[in-house]
Length: 280
Image (cartoon, rainbow, N blue to C red):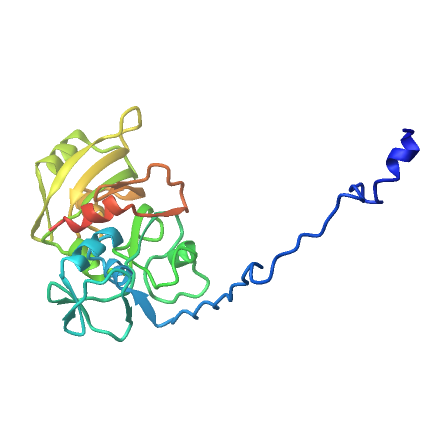
């Protein structure tokens, strides 16, 4: 058979004209078309119970499932153990009898650059630290404490009022380490005075450690302090006749500037939040 003869058996699309059959079904055997039910619109005012509990800062969402199953969580006075249960924002949710707030707690750490304000006062033409973290959250996050305009370093922001209260408490005394540059070399006698303990405004100040920075001029000093008093570091050195030209907070609690360039921010890890909550 010639090539022309063999090609006559094929249609234009290349299929075998004589062997092509349209598939047919016997009556009653045709595939059943399923009616797809449209998804119900989500209620913007409802939230899964485990997420509600987690957002309240009690625990993680995974642990919330465990507590819900154990009956630790009540909604409007009734224990709820059903997984996937949804509540409305207007519902009264309690964990072990304690009323919960569903607002998600957020924690942001900023490495503050120079020439940014941390005070809430509205000063026209002045740059504020809130602008540096504006993309971090839709919630209003406030700094736990403040750094002066010319000072740099770690600054913690949160909407967790309970944590802010604990960290600012003068009783607790947050661990802070500063790298200072003084207007003159620190005399060894004054270094010893600070190491032995100082009194500012008739109150003792707990200085854990103070020392010269290695391989740097004696104008550069590192100081570790446990105090929530405003401007306490400046006051310590002013009382001894020194002025601080540069001040950089390099440690706050257990938080450091590692992998956090100046002017950048990051979220705290779950473990970091837990560590801060353990400060009492």
